[in-house]
Length: 244
Length: 53
Figure 1 (spheres, each protein chain N blue to C red):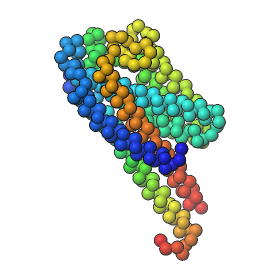
Figure 2: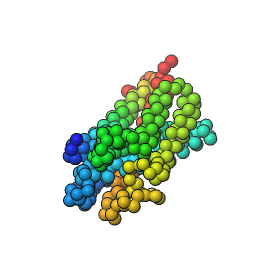
Figure 3: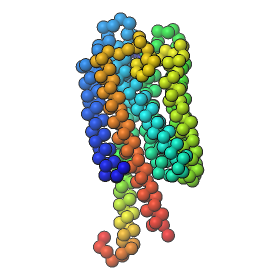
Figure 4: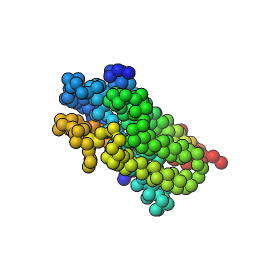
């Protein structure tokens, strides 16, 4: 992709993100159903995290998919041009994964509190949450590993292998809640979703809006991080040229 | 923890995290662009010491 096109997309996605979040705030407060009138809903306000939690998780999975694909491309071609996007996507994916974990933790504490156990223990012993925590820790280790290894080729090779293996937790998290009967986590989208967690058309549209907003945010942050990596390399090259 | 505190904490932490990361990236990009421009100007003046600065 040409640098000018990339810059245009980076700025367009920043605007899309801003408009998306303003729209999402409006939809969350004025269009989404008011769950406070439903006696079976334990925390009606916290349930509004529905419009932030799944979308941030999906965007983080998309980011990890970029790391996986770029990692495979690097292992196949051994070309460092694939390493830069893999690193940028992993960093942004880790951030979005953190957002999903933070929102999910607060939501889970409120929704699953009725099971009788200590609420935080209930959330973190839930199989899908556990898999996502493993995913988060794997990519935290991926980012640390990148800082610890010297030599661009060795770093890129090990990071690519690590990123590809780490990505396996994404399909695992998708399957966990669908295959394990003990899972408390509802699945609102995709094949095998829970019939009792089905969302109304109205909520479905807001969810789609939030998914597009978070995808725009991911694209903007990813391109911004790529731009930074390129600048860092250019500065390092210029310093090397300057030094005698 | 009650419903309002839960929502406010989750929402506030998310917004703060995203805003801080975006601001950090923008600040770092600006600083690197400045450093690169300075280095390029220095390299150009080294090549042509009589050129006006």
